[in-house]
Length: 148
Image (cartoon, rainbow, N blue to C red; front, side, top):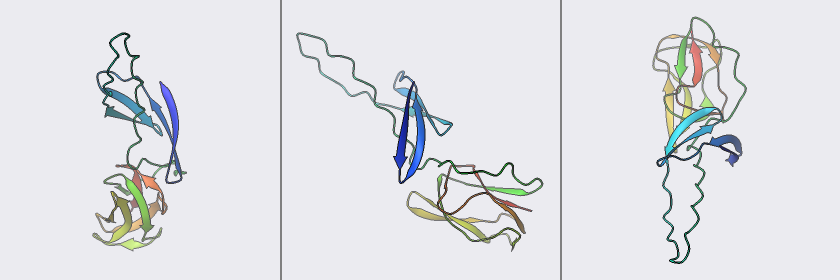
């Protein structure tokens, strides 16, 4: 296994690449495992001596992996958890803790694949906890907000 540290847009990502087998390998990025398909470049050997086996390329990090950020100890009990529907970066949080919201109100804006996505309240309630900050990268199913 080889370990790498990548810096993408100022965020540091720790990656581990396992041995490539049958065109697939497991890549661990900040503790989350991804299975990626790889292509081994074809190298033509000279007729007189065999070519050395090509070195496997390290797999590139996913488009927007999550930057490690301080996380709350645990989500507030008894609330409705609003989770990220896709990986991306939090652009702005439009609510504050204690604020009453109605179903359909925009809670925050998430950028993914160069598109802004409004994350809306699924139910009426009060914002009990905000688990992200603007500029923070999130992965799919990461906790964003808890409504009570």
